[in-house]
Image (cartoon, rainbow, N blue to C red; front, side, top):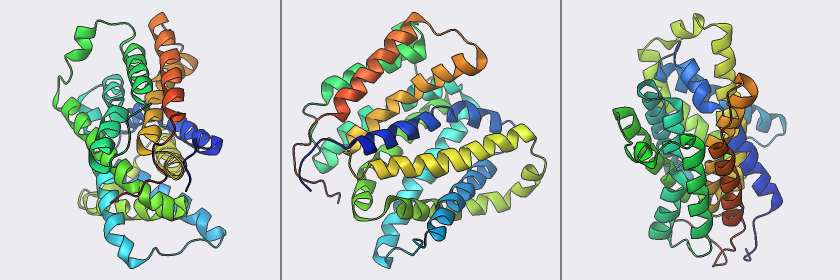
Length: 305
């Protein structure tokens, strides 16, 4: 693969994915009012698996990946889906969605530096964009609050769990990119989700989660459908597909858009005010993500270990 700028299609895929994920924090918080983390995570993963695998089956593209890839698929599913989502679900029970969104905004920084350390991905040309987008994320989430208040995090065990989740997600991004380059992304995502569903299953059945699903309200089902079909299904497939053409640090930079999108949705759907700090932060995020996404790779092709 020759060095080139990421395609518009890959950029659009990443943008669509984080747009869907932008509402996931508040939606998850709402769903956890009726469901335990184990039940929520199992149900949303099954829905995501059904959506992607069903679409592949209808097109005659559903097939098993070679057995030699199975250990890596299960390892990545445990790291990026099971571990990350479990930590964030538990964190949301102990912290606010806004605080969690702010801490998740550390993902691009963590990914960029881990990618440079572990697989030699170049930071040259990206540091400026990462810094600008990071500062924008701080402005959006803090809404102009003092820097001291932001630096006081983490304040709860939930915040600590969210920070750990940024590391697990970053490692998933870094080591999953090789699979995205070698296989059809929806097929790989179906395998990831299937492996994650198997991992979530014991907790669901031991906790008799079907009783919670049976008592779920209409709003609860809508939240579950959004998280399962939208976040775990469509958005995950789009984002992982973008990794085929983006470096790990470039794809991760789009995560900065999540708190911005969450704020915009709160304005549109809840009528909450959007502060001057939010507007300035949003502009900084867009500028920073653009700079990172347009950085030219310093090597011909990345092959993860």
